[in-house]
Length: 187
Image (cartoon, rainbow, N blue to C red):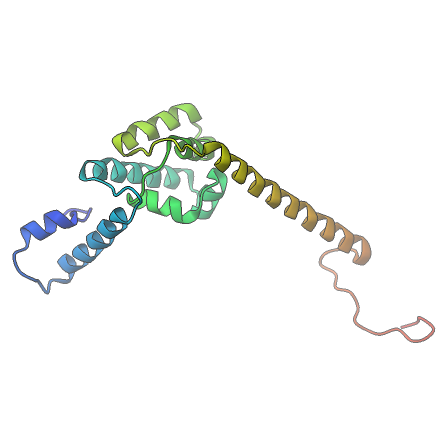
């Protein structure tokens, strides 16, 4: 058996009767899950798109491993959800060239490569499985920018609160006293 599980249609054509072999049954379950995920897209993924999607997923996993970035770090840097990144890595969702561009910009500094060349390699690997550009790209960009602005405002508010707390109580490690003061103000 190869390292990579066989697609569901190939496994079913090889098997003529149910099996109790745990290795084969797990391959069936795994392939069946991927097949269901691919079919649940708005535009179901065709057979000709599976190989490029899996190649893109393998390349993304390898690049992420080389950059030593976690899913959370890469997703945040590329401004995509962790779930979308995971779906790309296992080859069950298409993506757009603009998303691959953001991923390339996030990975390039860690890999010490040119982001443009990395983006071109990702697009070439995705090939025919690349999703068409969105007709709502301007709206998506505005929404993404609002999200970034809100996150920056929230972070600035947290910094101001920490600074006010430090001014009032001193060092972050020091805890304020809980003893009550008397009528004269003495402790």
